[in-house]
Image 1 (cartoon, rainbow, N blue to C red):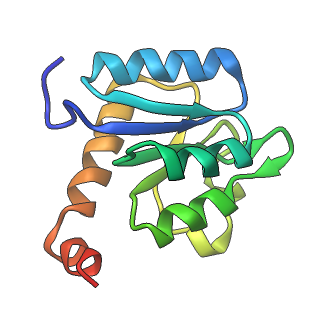
Image 2: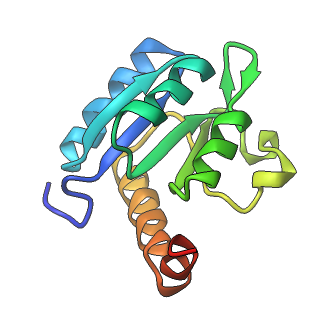
Length: 133
């Protein structure tokens, strides 16, 4: 599949191995590059320091621990991200309520649309001004 997502480096943060594998397959089908995959917050934070990441998909609940610390680190680095959950957006902390939430199970068209919207919004004039500060 050819689109504006080709070559986009995506960090996957997901504690369910099979779901992470499915997401990886879908991302590759969209032309993205999986820059890393983590199942625990500490792993994800380490990857943020060691691999190139353009965008991230965060499972809200990682073995009973929320991913909001990872979200805060991504926000501080001005890396766009979205949450993924099977429980609905209501589980997202108020601090991150404005960030996109995609429902699991993943569907290719929804994932492509959500990533494309997120990437375009992150690269709009306002985001560019934010990045230069």
